[in-house]
Amino acid sequence: MSREVAIAAFASAQCMRNRFTVLDLAYDLGVLFKYINKIQEDKNYLY
Image 1 (cartoon, rainbow, N blue to C red):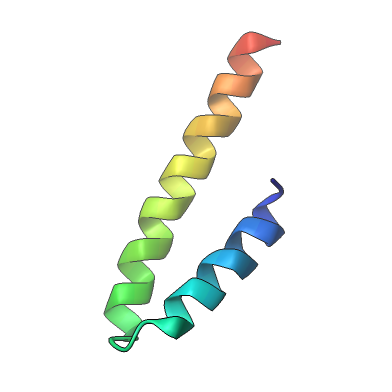
Image 2 (image 1 turned 45 degrees about the vertical axis):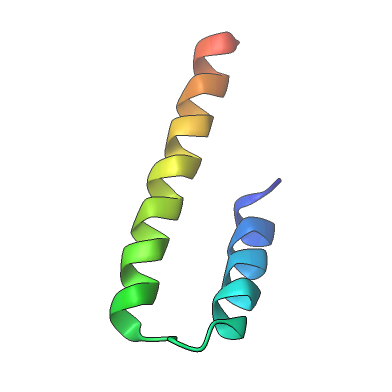
C-alpha cells in the first residue's frame, strides 16, 4: 500500500470518528508515519 493510499484511508477513517481534533490527527499521523517508516526500513533490510 502506497503512502498516499494509506493516508487517504486513514483520513477517511478519522473523519468517521466523532472526536476529530487537530491534536488527535497530529498524534495519529505521527504514529502512522512511524509505522510506515518502519515498514520501509524492513523492506530495505530484506533487499
